[in-house]
Image (cartoon, rainbow, N blue to C red; front, side, top):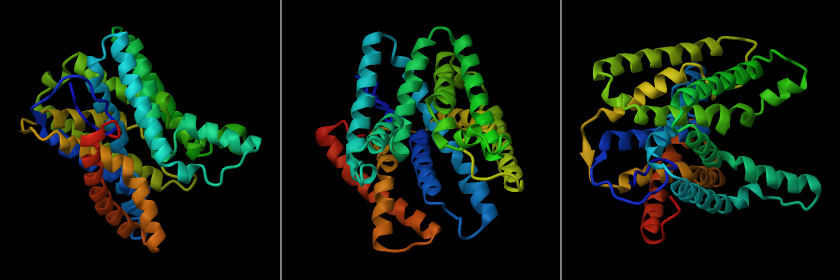
Length: 332
């Protein structure tokens, strides 16, 4: 089955009828990621930025993990797992080399410089952490592919731990300690274990137990609306706490709203035979930091025009990437 989603892996087979709603949803999610990385609305309204960009837009990465987990169901043998892992590794290496100019500059040959390079390769440069997170999440999901009750419990535990680490760090509940400094490093809570695996396994669990066919659309719609309200409420609460610093990746309400929105998109009956529409979201996600860099080199932008410009430029570059992908493969 080939089902391209942001950072999804190609597998043997072919899908002629794709879920059009899901493909469009993925493009919207990729544009949300651009909004996050360019601080969309930040210079216009504090409330709007925190509720929309630092709030609603945070559904993007968890839903991408859910989608990847949903289609991981076909990885049912060690050979397929190795093929999948190799595909992720090649994709990661290609884009890590592509962005080497940014993360290897200036390259120093002393111990600290070399350790920084090693750290970048292990953690992932900027947005490429997602590939590392997906690989780790996929390997864990494979271990618990038949023990779904245990896997679901572990996924929930990891998610809760991630939320706790984020909140303890952002509210400085252990101020002036090593733990406070550690918990305020993004990778401490935004990693394969505490963010990637929980949502990846949710997607796998949904497919394994056919939940998309068991829950009525009306119920999913209500659940999604409630989830959005919960996410906005959580964002608003954090915005108005003077002891809080920074923004959040690990919102508690994401565990509710993200699966609901994904299931709602999956219930759509609108289909398409255009497989390259799915490649577009992948390309946008992978190329957008380069586009941000280009825009910053040519002009000093406010955040919102920067975000809009990056979205447009990323769409243009994505078209080029898709044409290259048709000929050489492996880059999307």
